[in-house]
Length: 79
Image (cartoon, rainbow, N blue to C red):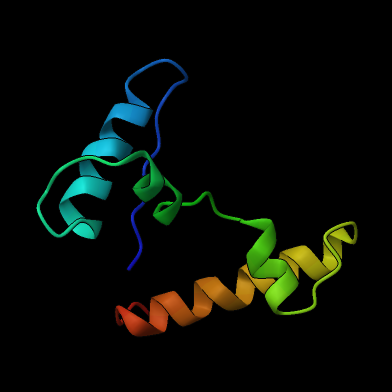
């Protein structure tokens, strides 16, 4: 699942992440700080490590971001 949240700093970003994490990731709909980690930032360093991408090499990072975007577009049928 992709949750895309874009906003200005100090505009309620964490509050919205809190509500979304309680809604999508809790059994009873109650907020728990541990659930916030389910909504990570992209690009997340762990994603790059999983695919053995050198995060210090801009070309490798851009290449994998491009691959992810193409997969996403194909998944939601945007050509």
